[in-house]
Image (cartoon, rainbow, N blue to C red; front, top):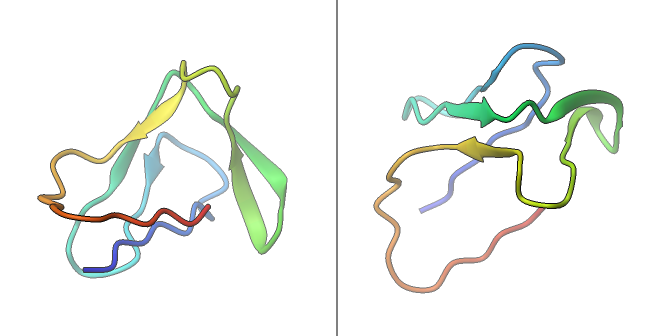
Length: 68
């Protein structure tokens, strides 16, 4: 299974899911939209786990690889 969020919305509190599976994420505790992304827009997190994206239960089991 591959999950993907581009974080290129540039505003708002939803990170749109990149396919038809409707797994949009809700931005929690206001991570900041930052126009200095590597590929267009990006999100800036404060680094101390106060802000994050809630994506709900993705029903992932086994090994997981995250690419940021």
